[in-house]
Each structure stands twice: as structure tokens, then as C-alpha cells.
Amino acid sequence: MPRILAIDYGLKRTGIAVTDEMQIIASGLTTIPSETVLSFLTDYFNKEKVGKVLIGEPKQMNGQPSESTPIIEAFVDKFKQTFPEMTLERVDERFTSKMAFQTMIDSGMKKKQRQNKALIDEISATIMLQDYLSKKIF
Figure 1 (cartoon, helix red, strand yellow):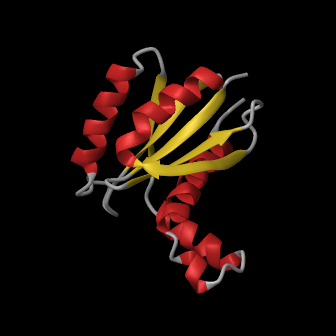
Figure 2 (tube, one colour):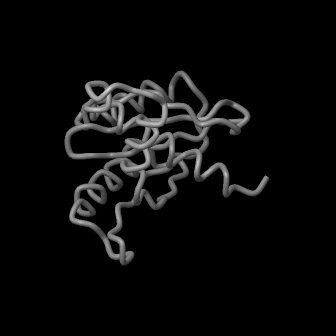
């Protein structure tokens, strides 16, 4: 079974998470500079079988697009051009950063460790992916 990969795309950094081959568990993969995402994915797709990519869709509390929507949409367009055969699904990413930060607190991380924004992005992608898996019907 192919993996599912989740992308929490940001202006500076992008968090990436991936499932196991059985699509049961979501794990953080990495956080990379956003300008390197497409080349990273090209390498990753050549090494691992990925059947679907989730990209976070930023929304405000009222469901309207957030300020970062144009940046994400531009990335989605580039993604589709680069990987036209890849299944792409947009998923709501509201609250994932707050949930990631709370997860860091709950796991006992020190204040200095919780300031690592790259780790927050990776955990956000993992939360987004795990949430998707929990709603998926087998």
C-alpha cells in the first residue's frame, strides 16, 4: 500500500509528515526550507511509494481563506505542474500549530525546545495527517 504524505507549507519552512506503508500511523518526517520542497519531494517520491499528498488549507475561524492562502495556492499550482499524476487533497489545517505547541508542552519539552519553529511545523503536518487517517474509511 502506498504512503500518504502531508505538507504544512509555509513562507519560510515546510513541515512534512508521512504514514507507514499500512497507512495506520502518521510520523513527522522533516522540516525543510520552503524553497526546497519540490526538489525534496522529487527525491522522496523516487525512493518511496506515495499514493496521495495532503496539503494544508489555511482558513480563518469563520471558514474564510486566511492571509496565507495566496502563498499556499501558488505552491499547489507548482506542485500540480511538477507532479501531475500525484493525487492531491486539501485538508483544513486550522489549529494544527496550536495543537503542535500543546503537544510539545504535554510531552514535557523545555521552553527552549518549544521555541523550535521547525519542530512545530513538522508536528503540525503530523497532526494534520493523523487527523486525516482517523477520519478515513477503510
